Image (cartoon, rainbow, N blue to C red; front, side, top):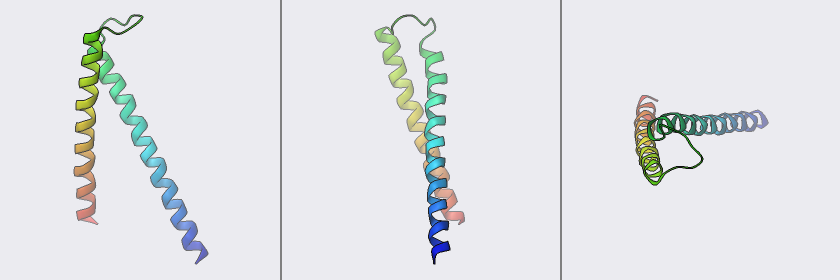
Length: 80
C-alpha cells in the first residue's frame, strides 16, 4: 500500500509541475504577443492607450487559452 501512496504523490507532483509550466508559458506568450502589439516604442511608462490595448489583449489571449484548454481536456476525458 505504501508504493501506491508514493505513486499517487509522484502523479500529484507531476500534475502540479505541469500546471506551473503551463502558467509560465501562458505568461510568456502574453508578454511576447501583447507587448509587441501594444507597445511599438517602449519608453519609461505606458500611455493610457498602450495600457488599454495591453489589458484587452491579455484578456482576449487568456479567454482563448482557457477555451483551448477546456476543449483539450474534454477530448482527453472522452478518449480515456
